[in-house]
Length: 112
Image 1 (cartoon, rainbow, N blue to C red):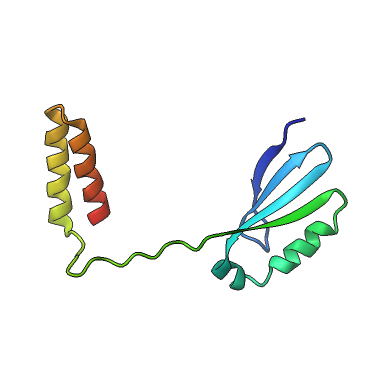
Image 2 (image 1 turned 90 degrees about the vertical axis):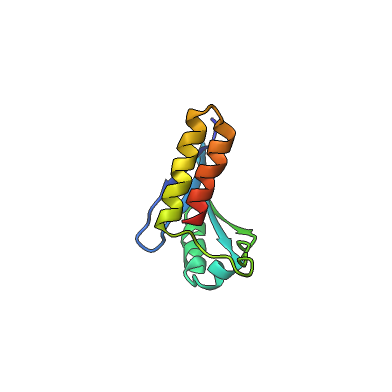
């Protein structure tokens, strides 16, 4: 039987992923090192899962999100800038320049 992946919400834990195959259940928790350090209940979850016959717990550590600094002098768009970029994107799209419209619309979202 192919495995199924489910997401469940528990009272004590925000979200847990389950992989179910036949009579085996694998609980997978995905954390960065900083989020792991901030969640002392992970051991409790591992013990609770391992206590169930046919269940196993796996902790998957992922890289920390990259923190980017804005270039010197950079500032967010104000509402007027966002509306202007959106209008430019609409004009570009109406002129058949869909790639330019995408870039303009994207920059309006990123800058706002």
